[in-house]
Image (tube, rainbow, N blue to C red; front, side):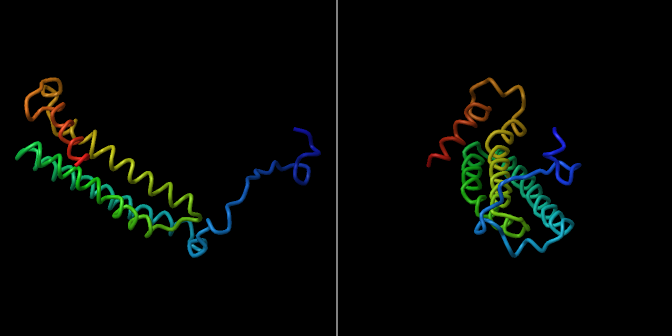
Length: 149
């Protein structure tokens, strides 16, 4: 780049369009980076603990019946976004886009784990292609059916 485009003849500036004033979370701007990271670490820890707890619950219910575990997954998927919204509100974010991104990440990861990954973990590999009542394909079918209801 030419020297005439450099700031003070030596620095390249990184310029981006600023956020809209109503998208800035003014009450969170005074938070230090360490305080922000601490809050995010706490909510991430709570998120991971809730995932592990739900996996254990679904695994327990799966031993009783595939239908019980499927309806538990559907119920949890329905009410988790409210819990994620509350957790995200405890975090400090500089703008609304950052807060929405955090909320989206939590909900998307949670739904992916509870709907897809959990079935792979709790169902043995030998039961992935067979079609008996407690195997993978009927289990995924009952989760989808429970989500519809």
